Image (cartoon, rainbow, N blue to C red; front, side):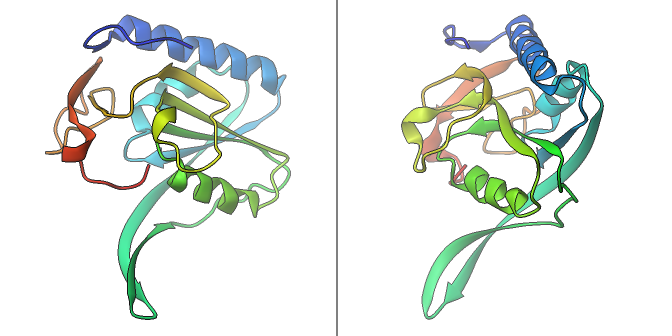
Amino acid sequence: MSARKAGGYSTARIAAAVAAMGKQITRECQGRRLDVVVTLDRGFMFAADLVRQIGAPVVCHFVREDVRDVEHAGQARREVFFGSQPELKDRNVLLVDAVLESGITQEFLLRRLGEGRPRSIRMAVLLDKPSRRRVALEPDYFGFRTASKEVWVGYGLAAPNGTGRNGRQLSTGASSKKRRGRGK
């Protein structure tokens, strides 16, 4: 939807982008119930603002990823686990996450949610970082496209030390190499 201004995104720009996504989602829902699956911890603030902009009945579900290093056949590898899956058969589903980077975690979750045979499944993200995508996945709705090397802090996103989630705007921090790699 929008390019970044130097230094970040203001509260007003974020609100405008979220409102525009909410209007688009509302038009596409056509008054039907929407089951919104929110990824915790990063997606909570964005999701709260987005669902308030959707003019259709909304039911929220929350999932938390658990990234673990496991050993399988003598090889160490990283796996992503999610808690219990909501009942989504024949429902219209919207997966909401704050950032889409490599897409690996979201693709896995979308496949897992699809096992519940929803009527439709779409994805909304606030920040889309397409240059780091490692899978063929694009968001159905996004607020801003941004460079992958940037680490964003504020509006629910934490700095590497865990602080900054409560910032009302988004600002850039250090390069993503200093951030914990979690394959988002």
